Length: 167
Ligand SMILES: [Zn+2]
Ligand SMILES: [Zn+2]
Ligand SMILES: [Zn+2]
Image 1 (tube, helix red, strand yellow):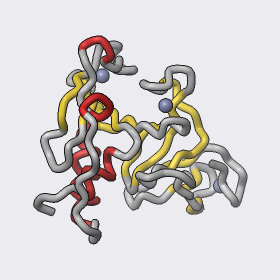
Image 2 (cartoon, helix red, strand yellow):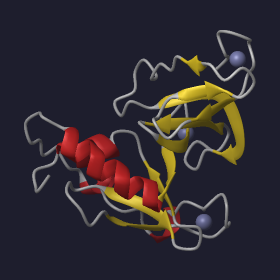
Image 3 (cartoon, protein in one colour):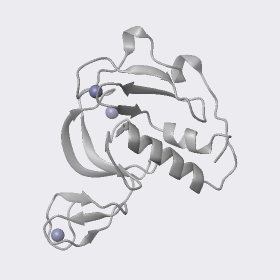
Image 4 (cartoon, rainbow, N blue to C red):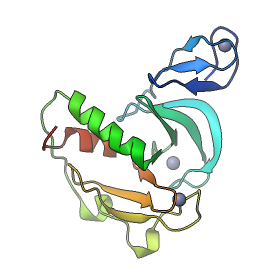
């Protein structure tokens, strides 16, 4: 993402969820990825972190609502801190006004990863745990206990948001 006023490449995410230019302090317009189910915003600025599932592409600096994340443009997976994830779930469920949706669930595709296919935490280089998210929705997430980051596959935050249960 480039600042429309001065062309600077790097943006800071404000607490409001808006991006500001580090150089001239103007607000930058962010557009979610065209095809993103989850409303993923990516800045075009690549991080050092390889995508956990694609491997051969790097995660971009980005955001979901007001929360800083790293995301993959190809698979639309999301690396987010556990605390931001908890807040995001709370905020999105509270804001959701649509019908409760229980999506199709295929245990082979959508269940926790088996012992041999665990993802490696890019920060700690240890295998991440894979388990059913304890909240609404039948969604398997990957989590690193050491650095408290969570990996979400494309569509998982939306499935959690739309699942039946207390809002
Ligand atoms: Zn600027
Ligand atoms: Zn990817
Ligand atoms: Zn970690």
